[in-house]
Amino acid sequence: MVHNDRYREGAFAPVKDEVTAYDLPVTGRLPTDLDGRYLRVGPNPLGIEVPDTHFWAFGAGMVHGVRIRGGRAEWYRNRWVRSAEVSGALDRMRRGLEPPAFLPPSPNIHVLRHAGRTVALTEAGGLPHELGHELDTLGEFPLAATPEGSSANAHSKVDPRTGDLHSVAYVLGRPFAQYVVTDSAGAITRTADIALPGALPFLHDFALSENFVVVFDIPLIFDMDAMRFRWDATHQAQVGVLPRAGGPVRWFPVESYYLSHVLNAYDDGSTITVDLIAAEGPVDVADPGAIEPRLDRWTIDLRTGRLDQQCTDDRAQDFPRVNDAYASRPYRYGYSAVSPVYGLRAGSDGPRSGKAPINVLIKHDLLRGTAEEHRFGNDAAVGEAAFAADPGGNRNEDAGYLMAYVADPDRGASDLVILSAQDFAGPPVARIHLPVRVPLGFHGNWIPETTAT
Image (cartoon, rainbow, N blue to C red; front, side):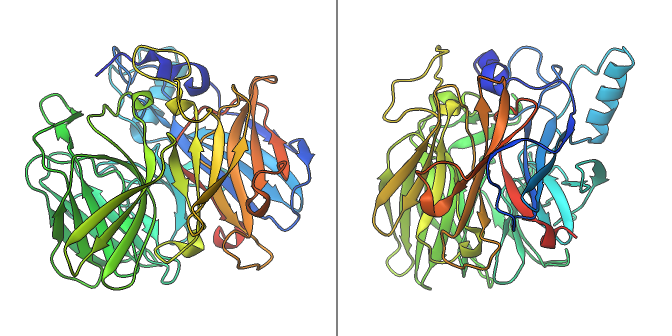
């Protein structure tokens, strides 16, 4: 573990206050039929989580949201996800008392809508927390919770055809993961244990196709003695394929690799295609700036037992997204970000010499093998862009918008930038000017109001 104070500074630096602002100024014109909230969560350390070293994923979760309706940006709010521990620490700090010596992270990785609830998600067995419409924390919500300690986890995925939520959950210290399916009402309809040989790997994400679940067993394993993830060069990397309809996991040994995130996957019954962000090992997840993840396409042939790996785009990028209506089905377009996360490397505080400038959103045309860029300024930190489908009913795959928080260094604050997916390289449709800065964080979603009632 390296000393990573730079992940508490600059674009990563936490904010100190919860803010509510109404009637936000807008440059450009907001589509009048956009009606919903853009929510994104990330770590916002209170300064007491890790005294000596800092792991970027540590820190009390904070959700940032913008409400859009009728061509107006009605409000911006940022709120800590108030787990019991975070609530207690905030209360003690407010009263001038000594905070606890250690604070476990509250849900800080993803926020989504399922079973009529808006929930913030975390890793490794922590329960999701439900959020109210105005981002207040309503408490723990046992979405996909099983007696073994599983629950909806960082990258639980909704199948748009069935409305089911699929999770591959793991709990630190347990030698297996658990596949959990939750229906649209929140009831668990299936669980399956996935045995993991040796130490527990970092199971941050997985792939879901129409008929299969794909699990990535990588050499980044959890060290119970050191209480952190570390690279184990002796750990055999492999990819597991689990039939959604039931059956054993089939494992495919592969060369050592690191999986960051999955873009999407689909199958034709015997061949599974997975687009994912991967990197060569060894890696230290505490220092993401030292990782150079790229977009790959992996093809698994279940008849021959062959797994082929091909690089699609070798620029250092991450936070891939897709039009969720095409999740787990054949698709053409994907979106990713080149951000300041990859502008740092071990021993350096400045931009790395790379193959692409920082602060770029990319639209991949996977059918043609081409890509478009939307570039921002060198100091305009940008992270994940979530897809918002065209509310007017246009069902073309790229009919809709990309939404992302982008730093505005001239104002010392951030904007919510809205791009047309079909005019990706063109000027933004709108920039909603927030009164404060939004730190670089993790994942979120556009939640249409029709799904939030």
